[in-house]
Image (cartoon, rainbow, N blue to C red; front, side, top):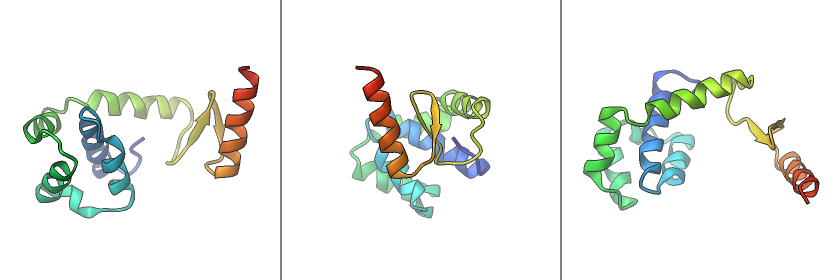
Length: 115
């Protein structure tokens, strides 16, 4: 959920474009680590090449805003669920503190309930 303005929306669009070619997590992780180079054409080209993406397809996706509806829908859903920051974690529709022990416990409980 992009909550920090235009740069966050741009990052979310880029990550979704990378996801179309199977590279969601590498781009996500680099943005979340604060890699400012991904806000430059050179940095995006370097990461896309490193991940083996089809550069033309990747750039067309970004420039055409193909993934903006996905980002927008995610933002709206987050707002409806009361999300105000990232990370916010839900397990089986219930908000969980984004701490490993809490997440693990919630997943185990949900799995046990589903048995």
